[in-house]
Length: 196
Image (cartoon, rainbow, N blue to C red):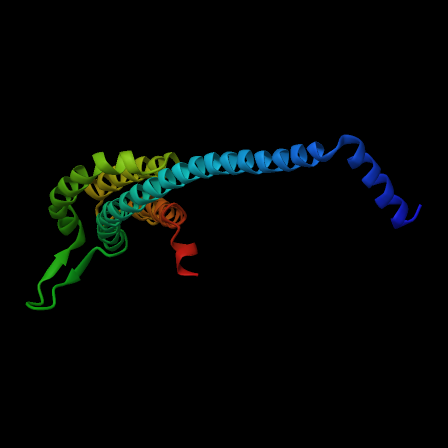
């Protein structure tokens, strides 16, 4: 069958239906285009509405992240200050104060600073318990337990305590918790991916 034969067949079919068939085919095509346009318009409106909702959620998430970031960084700064005090207390029994050369015992320094730390910790704990994901909250609770255990070890400490000293052993646990907490906070705050 040649192209000329195909044209003859098509012309015979159209002739048998008459000119009205052309009008019907044309109207059907036009009506199909109108319906497709309306469907596309409806779908576009739905997608625009969903997109606007996502923009709103993203704005809230960004604002929430920035606020939570400040709270979490403030919490970690308090944790780290106390960690450093525990570290010095665990490994050094006394140190000299630079201005006057007076000897300061780390046990006394630790006990004197507990009140300030506990009030800062209590102030942040309620909010941080709501913000931290469950694994980090479990680390927080372990840290509280180990800080309390360290406090007991410092109270019980005497310079004649046999090696290895209990306060050093307890501090090693605190050191492990700190490393886990830092890794968990980096993952939670996505700081590794933000820095790349």
